[in-house]
Amino acid sequence: MDHSSPLAERMRPTSLEGYVGQKHLVATGAPIWEMLESRLLRSFILWGPPGVGKTTLAQIIAEEMGVPFYTLSAVNSGVKDVREVIQRAEESRRSLFSSTDIPILFIDEIHRFSKSQQDSLLHAVEKGSIILIGATTENPSFEVIRPLLSRCRVFVLKSLSKDDLDELLKRTIAEDPVMKEYHFDVQETDALFAASGGDARKLLNIIELLALSAEAHGNKKVTISDEIVANLIQQSPAVYDKGGEMHYDIISAFIKSVRGSDPDAALYWLARMVEGGEDPKFIARRLIILAAEDIGLAKPNALLIAEATFQAIERIGWPEGRIPLAETTIYLACSPKSNSAYKAIDRAIDLVRKSPPYPVPIHLRNAPTELMEELGYGAEYIYPHDHHGHYVPQDYLPEQIQGSKFWQSAENAQEMRLLANLREMSEPYQTGNEEKKL
Image 1 (cartoon, rainbow, N blue to C red):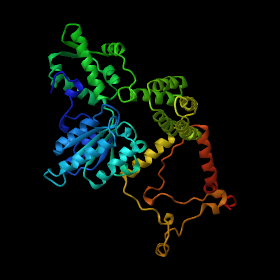
Image 2: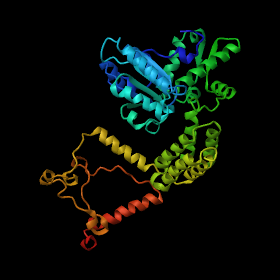
Image 3: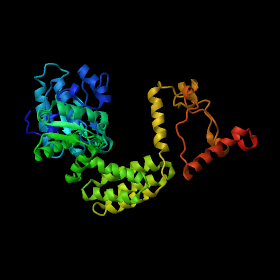
Image 4: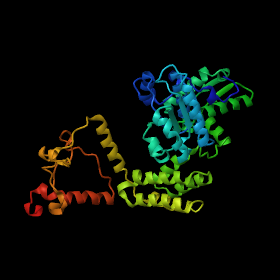
């Protein structure tokens, strides 16, 4: 390794043993570990914030498999480049020892590929002449065409935890040949890890800046404290980079300001993104997620307004699109908040993952054939519209989990009205008032 190369490049691991973070994917028994162990790779997309090891993981997989590794950057590659690299990959496959060994094509920032570029990948992925590994910081369900996405697994990578960052810090000090020339005095790490924001590249860049700062003062002692790190960052402020460095920091501050009902702070972070050249559709999508996750049932119209904002941006373009973005940002920030729907679906998903696939109760099943009717499918289903208030109590959950509750209402006027409506419909059946039932 060239000692003059950046620290982040020098510390790039070449095996899973040296890979920091993402234990849910690479630990023994985890999905990527199993693929490597079985030597049966399938195309997949790595989705996560910058600096968490997407590119490194793809390179390690290729190294572990011993197959040709081709790379394309979505920023500067066209359809012609895609076809040429696929052709080279298909030609190289003939020289591989095993028929299950398939060349890997890694596409960085696959979310930047146009539809036609993504279409050009489909045939090769379908027939298995390449293993596609895509890396993206954007939600693949928004940015990757459905036919391609349906042929790929999606692995979500997480920001590095404090433990991960601490492990990387210790490894860097102990193993990097350049850093070993310095004497590190690690006093505090809170500011260092906070400034890193779960991004390994940021962490290593700050460490390198600390070392260079010590060198500039004529010594080899590098002190890491909260005060020193804070001063260093103030002297070397990062500019907004929609491709990586501060992308997730700014959008995180924006989301938290809206969630925290501070319209002025939200507008400030919105302005930072606007001036930084952020994709307005990216911001609009975050507003849609905010409306559903953080406002939710407290004001359901928020979701409609956020969706309308996305459509408005598509129709009027830029720079006028900043106006509906600002309008919706203020509206969402000033709206009552509830995450009850968000928590409810996660509770339901958690139960589904922990439970066997219980059969649908027979009275809820569809009966499109005579045989199914004979078997009693749907026979005991009670049609609610035939009853008072268009409601009648019956079991809708599998027998094994009857009584499970997933939605817990938040204390806001809208959800209180929803609860009151449920109580009003069910009350006659709880009190035994036969007249109200009829």
